[in-house]
Image 1: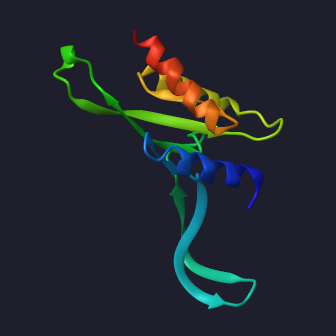
Image 2: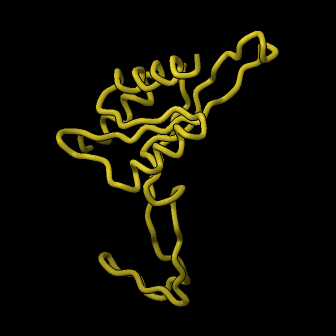
Length: 132
């Protein structure tokens, strides 16, 4: 398991009570009727692309954070869309990843680039304080 995969699991486990974050892999695979299979090769007929994940640039972890609504809003709990782009070392988010995070924040969601569990807490704190 790579450093990023380890960090993703750590974030999910540590914050599972406060946030529900799910791994979001994006990519393309091929589906069709298998006509030949060996240990290293798979041949399919009528191939068609199978797109996985949300959209290109969507974050590694997506889900929601349960928030207690103020008394002015009937005292209800709501789920706020949450996106965490996990990076390790010197790696940086792509332009598409940055735009996805910006779109989530512009729509009232919680989003940011994270390199630790503490970073996820920080983006929540920033979101919470920006709504006051």
